[in-house]
Structure formats: C-alpha cells, structure tokens
Amino acid sequence: MIEKTNAVPGDYVEVHLTKLIYEGVLLEAPEIEKGTVLLKLDSGYNIGFNKKDILKIVVMKKAKEKEEGKIEIKKDNEKPTIALVITGGTIASILNPKTGGVHALQKPEDFFKFYPELFNKVNVRVENPFMKMSEDMDSKDWQKLAKVVVELLNDSNIQGVVITHGTDTLHYTSSALSFFIRDLNKPVVLTYSQRSIDRASSDANLNLQCAAIVAISDIAEISLVGHTSSNDDSCYAMPGTKVRKLHTSRRDAFKVVNAKPFAKISIDKTEGKNGKFFQSISPVGEIERISDWNLRNKRKAKLDSKFEEKIALVKIYPGQNPDILDYYAKNKYKGIVLELTGLGQAPTKKARNSWTQKLKEVQKKGIIICAVSQCIYGRVDALVYSNGREILETGVIYLEDMLAETALVKLGWVLGHEEWAKNKKIVKEKMLTNFAGELNNRLEE
Image (cartoon, rainbow, N blue to C red; front, side, top):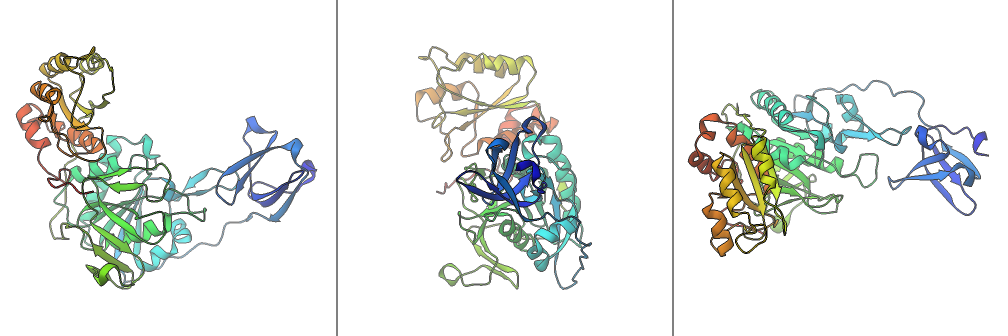
C-alpha cells in the first residue's frame, strides 16, 4: 500500500497503522533511512515509521506547488522605521516541509509573510550581515555585527535596531554589543524564539512585536527582549549584560540575574499593573517601567570593538588539577575567568590539588586571572573564608556580581586595548568599572 500512495514530501497526510492513525506533514527521509517514513506532527515533533508497519497513507492536503505571488511592501510615512538585522536563529527560520529541517528568512517579503503584525506597527529595513547558528558565532561575528549596528544607529532615518539571533549564545552577543558600542544614542534590541513560527506554540511573533515597540521607545540601551512567562501575553526588556539563558526550551528562557528588567512590554493598549504605564506608544503598544534606563539622545554612536581572543572560562570542580592552567600559559593566553564555588572558593592548602601556587605561577607569566561565582545569583566575596583570602592574595581579581559570560566578554574587550592590557592595575580598574550595567551594588531577586 505504501508504494501506491501519491503522497509527496510536503503533503499533509494520515499514516494508518494497524491500530493507530497519525496526522502530519510528510517529510523527505534521508538516504540512510530509506526504509522509514518520516512525519512532522502538529506538535512540531518528528516521528518515524518502518514502511512495513504502514497500512496506507492518505493525503489530506497537497503541498503548495508554486510560490505565492510577489508581496509588495509599502512604506508608510506615518510609521517609524526600524532596522531589522537578521543573524539567524529559530526566529528567522521556517520549516522546510520536504526535509523537516528549517531554512532562513532573508528577504523583507519573507518576514512580511510570516510576521505581518510587525509591519503593521513599523516600517522595516532588513539587513543581513551573516547567517549563523549562534553556537557557531565568535568575537569576529560580534565585531562585524557591532559595526553594522553603529552605522544604523547613526542613520537619521532609523528609529532603532532589532537583531534576530539564536538563543544559545545570545547573552554573549548582548554583552559584546554592550561594550563594543559607546555613546549609545538609540535602542538596540536583541530578540529570539525558542519555537519556530510554523508551530502553534511559537514565541516568535510576540517577541518580535515587543522588540519593535522597544526599538521605537526612548530606551537607549542594549536590551534583550523575550517572554515574561510561558504565557503568550507580554515581554520583558532586559539589560544586555545582566541576562542569562536559564532554560533549554521554555519561552521565557532568559532571565535577569542580580538586577531588574528595564520594562514590561504589552502589544495591546490595556491598563496594566496599578494602572501606571511609563510610556504609551500609540497605537502599537505600551511599556511599563520597572527600572531606570538611559534615554534616547542626539550623540553619535561610536565603535570600540577591540578584542583579545586568547581568553578562557574555566569552571572549578572538586579535585580538579590546577595543571590545566599550564595549557593556557603554554599557548600564551592573556586572560582567564575562573568560575569559583560559592562566594569565591577554590581548592587551597588542605586540598590534595591546591590551586594557590599554580595561580601565583601563571600570573607571574602575565596572565590576568579574574573570578566569578558558579552560583547564578549573588556576588563573590573573598574575605568571608580563609580559602577565599588565600586565592585573593595570589592576585586574582574578584568581579563582584558579574555573570561569568559577561566577565569573559568584558575581559576580552579590556585586554583588546593594548594601552590597558600592559598594566595589571589598569586592567583591574577597568574590569571593576561599570561600563554597561554589568556590575550592580544592590542585588535584586
């Protein structure tokens, strides 16, 4: 029966087994799975069947044979204009019905087709500097992105910038832009989705609309915009240096750590908490202030994207041999961020593998060592326990409440400035200078 079906990849079908019937989009099976029928279920998950177990396949709806006519996007002079910088990620991808994989949206027409609500709120100018999975990105990509963004910020026709990005390393990029862009004059908003637009539970549309609202507001910050909860009703605008991905799949995966969001964004004009909204952006939505932010201004944004790539992030664990630091010394690394336990501890005198002497040795070779906590919340304090005091006395720089990912990016940025990097006192001063909200004297839940 399976050989007689007229179903082709992309068709919506029923797969009949002996006792069960499954519905979904028929996918093209890879060469190594030619004895298998693949189906994308309505839930978004794929399932495979052995051809021998299938009684029949019934086509419920044929795949579209032709592309739809060209979409004309008209600019409305009554609407503000934002720049949409596409770098990749789930939010800029849609299902390929033949393969079950995704392919990137790159043209304005593609975005208009899947995100018409965005175009109802603002005019959109699309920029596409590169397309990468976020786990494949590195400092060269951050530098390229920062250059594009600075040029857009200094374009008088652009109200603000929205960047679509994969989730896995989004907080690294938001930190990098926070340091690379000086004298910020307009909003720069990074946003994402955990689930692709073809899934009913997608968070893409709301995140993108909320991002656009922030982009035309007066929040002149590098912020990350995403769901406030698993519900599909509002988003937070979160500081780029104080945010972290804390869940692998939830729609509200990103949370602010040791600080507060800038604002809560609603796309509908309804009265919010306590009836107090900071800013109404009629008719596109409303913004509820949660904490202070820098205001939109007339300065010219500047690019400062110097970066030292010879840096590392090392997590301390029980019994760890400190000789790992010899690898970094041998390969001429310039800086290391240590994720210490608790308030800032590492194995010392009483440990079988004490780190004290090795830390002294590698710092004498010129490597800058900084310390943050493995704990998500709170700050390091070397003075509470004797072990911490011992580590501090080796010369390690304790970075208060800075997040590990932010610390790594900042260390690379600081060491990228040769005039700073040649003097450890200056490096320490810069690492403990609050350039972009990365340090917070008063911790928030």
